[in-house]
Length: 286
Image (cartoon, rainbow, N blue to C red; front, side, top):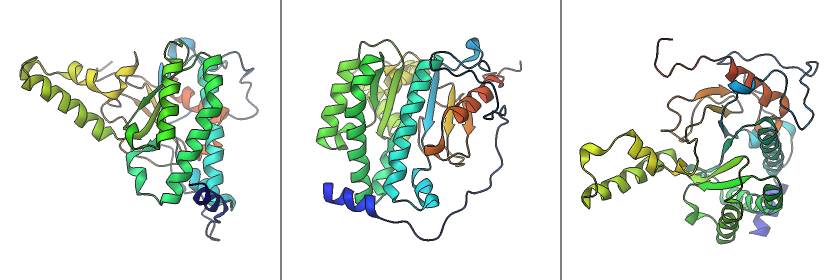
């Protein structure tokens, strides 16, 4: 694997530079500039954010790593490494600003269709990053959970993930949920299969199956807040890509033009300000 990863890091993108696609913003966001007095000091919530309107659960589709590399003329692996740094910063901000749950789409089950050299690199980067961050998770009281089919991940990564989950299971700070080899469709399928077995074995009747019984079988039952209040997707793409399909039914959606490696404090603050301007009706008229 190491030889493949080294080759991947050395691969140069096509000489054709891809310009950012011009897309209209889907939701209005409060403008945040470097000149704004955001009062971020590493220990307090920015003045623009109202405590009682903070989302409890934020989900993120971290998109645009490869495009970031191509646009900068860098080796393609550099985008994923820059994306890992952006991930660490968002984890820090969630802890500082009082968000209770952060779910990140680290690797989709559909991503196995990418070249093997790329998936090998991603798995190695995932393992190295988790190994480096575990002590910080413990120190900062962060709890780690995993959703997705971990059996298809490299064995060493499986062991490391299991250790991270076990080591942090009693932490009471930010709950970090890592979706790895995850599929929203498969999440629903396996929930239905478990319920079908309960019916077959006579433990419940078909008419007893309801939304609550399905939610209990979804992988996000690991948290007290399984349904995200806010979904952020970067890189200007306007789709869910098989992520948390049931759980996002009433989630506020925010699409950022920033590529994931460029997503930092200002971009995250802008997304949260946009969220706090929304009126969440859940189907009600008022």
